[in-house]
Length: 588
Image (tube, rainbow, N blue to C red; front, side, top):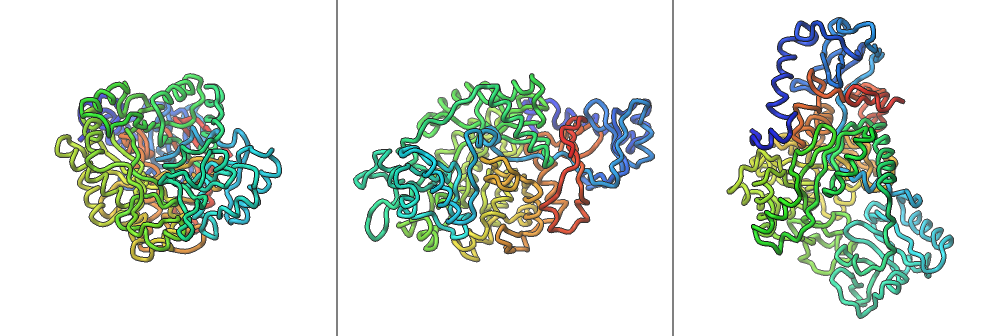
């Protein structure tokens, strides 16, 4: 059960909306006496309505009134609610599903990522080097060439370019290939940043044989780079770019999004857009911790959290405050994720690791995390963290369990963002604590092949085990971690929910392999991960996430039969119409 404080704050959630929803459903059956006398604003009929209710019921028609679903049932039942001014939409047998929810993305950053120019998502080392060479020929000497999100393990060769290769294509231009938690630079970037062979920093990696800098670096050394300042944008420019990004999200069926790393100040951007009528998505904003809690007393941490002035659930059905978020480790694609065991010999070769006992880069211990978790939980915050390695998963669960001895944790629906590696024991612990697995299926699609080669056939068995998670009783929410570029399939990371669903259902990767097919889940389960499960993660399962009377009229009409089309066509699913609060926000 949710705390009374959280119920009051969320307003439309849990018990508060549950009563009117049940009244309509029980009294009306579908479109019977409970809605008699009411006239729908719109009726969608002659369709295949996948309600995603508790029984995954399939209906033929749905009625909408005042931005909410009025009734769901047969064509005959629902069409009775139409009046002279009711819009009647013949679905022509098409499938309709609840509005999809993106569980973890960075739309604020992504929306502006191509504002200063486009950049590629290269598939081979040759394509990457060709782009750098072209940039060097176009730009004056000394001007930086920066790829904002370049993951070398996604290249066919599965390696970063060598220092010599970077120098050969850009001898006079500083180059930085930013992989979020690791990257590559050339000699010109070292010169521009004052980095020499005598510079000692654990984040600057060296050739094992010669001891010389090899151009590889970890995120801890990013601060050494004298990069040009990031461009600044006005509130109006940011809002316009984000509105355009949301239009692209609507095009693939999203009606809601969780921002993966916002600030309290970012809420002003969303409120501005809401006031101007620019929002075509509902937003749940995770708030990044911006104070050094590891160096603070329990009392100081509590005051810092109080000073934020908000808590999980504050807001309305358009914009709500999400979880309080921190960072546990680095990333799996740069060898900085914190694993349960040493990374191993293959990783040493790819990531330049020299210590055979190296497990990654944890940012804190469980003991350092626990005071933040406890203080947040005491104040009604849902707590979460970026965590990409299995060692990080265990560290978070240790901290959550310690906090659970002081605060009732399960009602707060803590989550682990990414996680990636879950053992049977960690799944049991998640279930006991009510911890949600905030998964990114596109990472499996993009990165499972690399992880198999790097970690081997045994350790890969814990990588994105969707079926095991669900069978263990863990709620799995699904998102993309979309960061840069605008295309749904060629962005980094791809945000197409249909590509992700296809990967969850088939366990196929970009390279065409099938990895751990026994962890595949059904289409019904995958759809739940993008609808009702994500609504649950934001405490709004009684408000959205399924097509049921009383809920917000968020719905997507598809061009193919979701349940009946060939599995491989799921990844190319097209949206015919996206409806938000009863209004069409996208029509093909």
